[in-house]
Amino acid sequence: MDFNYTLRYRTFDQLLEDVTIDLNTFALENMIEPQQLIKLAKKINYDLGLRLNQTKEAALDVCHGRVKLPDDFYTFNYGLMCGNFVISTGYGGAVSGTNIQEVPYVETPSTVDLCAPITVNCNTCNSNPCNHTAACPSNVGVITPVIPIAHDPANPYGNTCISPRVFMNCKGDNYELIQVVNSSQTRVYKELIPLRMKIGQGVEKGCPNLSVNAPNEGWIKGGFLFTNFQEGTVYINYQGQMEDDNGNLMVPDHDLLNEYYEYALKQRILENLYLNGEDVSQRMGLIDQRLRAARNQALSLVNTPNFKELYDIWWTNRRAQNSKYYDMFNSNTPSNAYPQNPNITRVVG
Image (tube, rainbow, N blue to C red; front, top):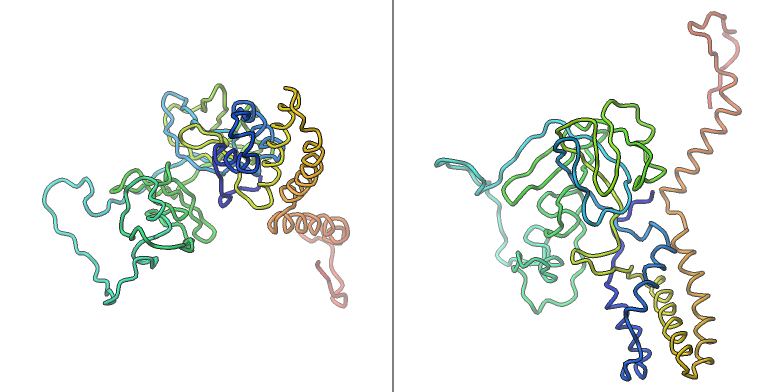
């Protein structure tokens, strides 16, 4: 599974608005019915595959051997059982009694740039999705998104309002799981235990948990994750449904995919008008040609492997060739019982 963290999305209503602008005559006469087009947009999402779905993460607290999966859960990528964690509290945390904490000194220039990463992420402030940030002026123009170099618990993926605030953090050869519980408490899991998953609904066929040999086992059924242990915390990485937090249908917002969605909706609108007796046969012929080309372009983009996938293919082929042509010269005896000729130079691929 190619995990997708960066693709932008828009709602179905925004897509339909762009379509009705091109068909404004029919829109003004109320000849376009949105309910007839929602199922078409969902079909196109399915046609383009799971690469469109946004990759999400969550930490679930298992109670009595089961826990409800997130509402936007679609398919399971991989998961881990979380061990012990360290709680860190920030200033103003739930600390009882009176205490004095030393605040580190940071030199601030005389002219403060509100859009500098060290002060505030203006890309988040200007969008203001949860009304928690208001440090940027409202008249700021186009802001270049600030992409963090490393995961920041206070601002994961450049957005302070992402929920749930859970993500994996790479520390060299080790990984740690960071869960932001609230503004004053953060849990850091450094002990991650393998979890074996049973084959079933909602589990991606390439899931690495299917081949793990571990005593901790889980399976998905009826929107719940069941486990063979009673209590614990499970981290899951999953593909989310194509919908927002309010349940509105989402479609990708990409320059090479938008035409496929727009021409497909136009083709269905004209088809419905034709069945209702409207003379739109010539327009349908034009749209059918454009739709065919736009679909081929969209499928070509979605099915093109990225650099990581090409590297994995190259490395798999490299190991296969090494096993075929070089491993036959390696000695398989446990203690090198046969003497080697010192005059022969051994070449290992």
